[in-house]
Image (tube, rainbow, N blue to C red):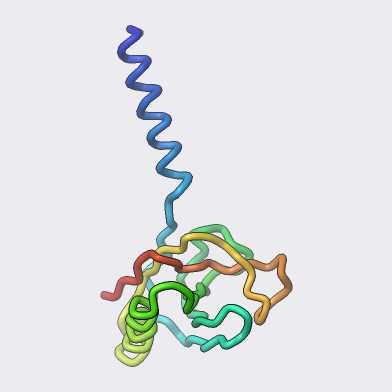
Length: 122
């Protein structure tokens, strides 16, 4: 292997490793079955459905959209979830991390969070 090929391979490896460190995980496409409006410590909505467990959190088939951050984006996401339930359309979300929602479970139990990413409907 030439020195140039080794450098290229190392660059590709580092680039891919760095990209994965900040990646979000896509849920399965599913029709939401229900959602809960949470007004506890971290307000937002918890969405239930057959979404799988893309991020490997303690709980699957559920994700949390916190109200914190961009109010307009949050309102659009809530409207999308409500429309999907009303029309039977599927949604998929990009889960950015796993974190506890103390209103639901003990602090060691985590749920997927959708923060600053996308929620898609089809």
